[in-house]
Image (cartoon, rainbow, N blue to C red; front, side):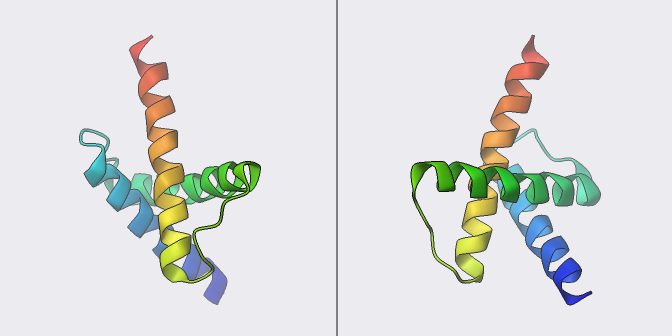
Length: 82
């Protein structure tokens, strides 16, 4: 149960930060949590492919999720334009 709470908190923080960085992509609390969680998966996959690590602590996890969420929002923006 603690892991679920941890994932939701990190997802919410990462989604909110990504929404603030990329204006116009705020999806509300639940949307930001979803974007943050999906962004964490994207960020982990992307950095694993590149052989890069941003650290093992909470800050590294949040940065990875934020970067992944930004990549996800970029792709969503491209798809919405078409």
